[in-house]
Length: 71
Image 1 (cartoon, rainbow, N blue to C red):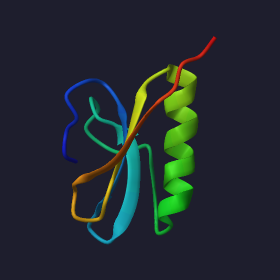
Image 2 (tube, rainbow, N blue to C red):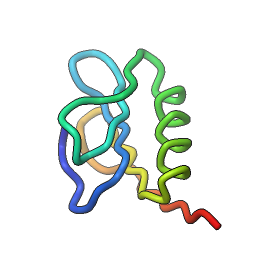
Image 3 (cartoon, helix red, strand yellow):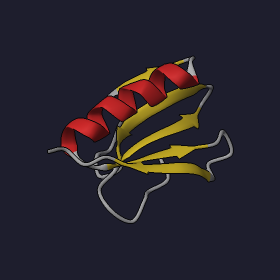
């Protein structure tokens, strides 16, 4: 997975599937065929952990970065 510069949750495409995982961990915690489903999983984990959520396009470029703050 391409790495973001700080601990973040990333949603990315690799080897024919979408994946979501922490950028500072070696593998994804969720994978599947539907991009929107994996973005939703990434959103929830990023929100719970007050971490950025990096959403990548299929070519690996950053399409969006969202930051969530918990109260």
